[in-house]
Image (cartoon, rainbow, N blue to C red; front, side):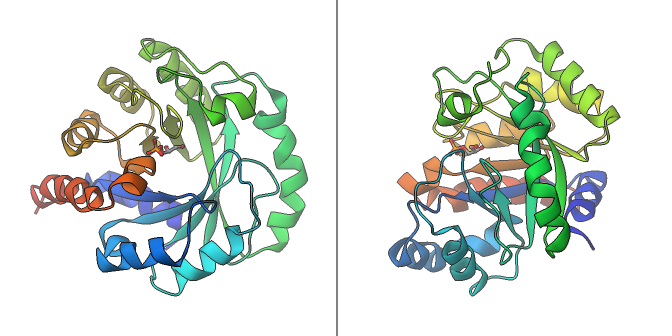
Length: 250
Ligand code: 1GP
């Protein structure tokens, strides 16, 4: 089954999912060993590799290292059309629909499309919504867009509806890596009520209890990056909350 269809299927079944975001600039053999010791890849549904600004040339080597240790989908989370690598299983084809910058709505995509068409990468058409998270992030700076206000869930819902009507298959609401605040429960609730697309939520998730609330509010997949870099054992604690919710369905 295709990666995107599997996520839709999990949503239909009410199953919650977790993704680990790996920053290739910070990834090395030592971090890999730490993650392996914690059996980290077994506890998540996806491994995302990427970020808004990548300074090195190691997306490919990071993906290959991870893929040598797991069968889980390794998916590129690109910041630009330079972030394409054929060793991944798929790529989030992000259209930044919360912003009005044509470059990130369609511009980068035009350059990437012919390359992706020739690749074996699975394309995940994603409506990316950057949400204000208490401070400017690399994502807001690099995209040159104004994040949508944190306390305007109704605006987020309209954006998600438009994205779904345009044919995007999943929504990703993100306050950006290292944000002070994560996306509010109210916003998660309104987006999930307004569209049938799976909802991925990320940015600033640091506490297992907060993750539980976000899943309960309706998020289908949560993405955690920064907090795991600081405290890798947190991944198991967050995964436990996911298992708790999923086990209730059995
Ligand atoms: C950022 O959603 C991701 O785009 C993850 O954010 O690194 O803050 O967990 P964190």
